[in-house]
Amino acid sequence: MNIEIANRLVELRKKNNLSQEELAAKLGLSRQAVSKWERAEASPDTDNLICLAKIYNISLDELLQNAAAVEEIVNAERAAPESANKEEPPHEEEPRESKKKSYVHIGGHGVRIGDSRIEKKYRKARSMITGLAALAATIAYILIGAFTGLWHPWWILFLAIPVIESIVSCVAYRRVTKFAYPIIVVIAYLLIGFLLGGWHPWWILFLTIPVFYMAFRPLEKLWLKDKTVTIDGVEVKLDRVGLDEDDKEDEDEDDKDEDEDK
Image (cartoon, rainbow, N blue to C red; front, side, top):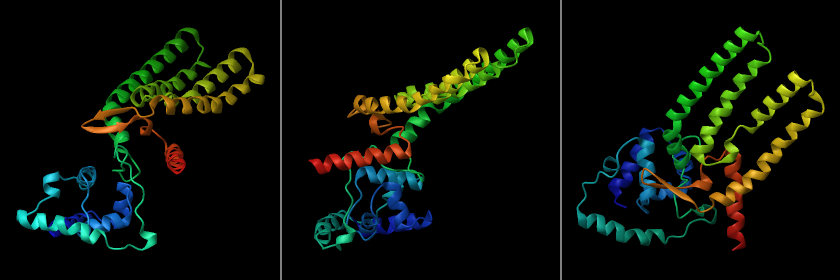
């Protein structure tokens, strides 16, 4: 990498009040990788350049401003392999990186490319549908209460709002486990208790919640494995999209075990 670009990477990082460790965490890399870029010993690949531009909120042209002559750039690229061959301390070994950067971190809270872009795609639809559901639940509750006097237990209608919102998430992320099944169980238990007085033994319904997730998570993983979608030119692996932090850790551990088996 040309020294001018390396210096610009240092300047942009400091301008955004980021340490090498913090920037590396956002990119899912090691601090040593970022350090090599800033010492002009290595160059970021295309995916990392895109992520850097997004993090610094600038265009790729602004990121790669370079007044050096063609000969200087070529000579710098030829010199890079020589510096790359220098021995690194054992503890500075680069972490394993995926060939596909579909789940590179670009946000400050571990947000992955697929998550953030799909989120933008369906945020408006989710807000509109949730708003309509809230309005419908309010109108239905008022009408039922006004005409029948049964204000209780029909307040349960309001619990349907997050259920409807979760259906939008199911469609957006293509994950059954995004469905608010625990709330459905609560609704069913309350209705059985209030209308039939069957509080016992119907508490057993709550035992179906872990069964639901234990059954569908492996099926999701099998169904979405190796399937991808392209969002704004970025290839996103569906089995990596919409995962909670605990799920992501489990997925990473599974990948590590598979690689060790190989």
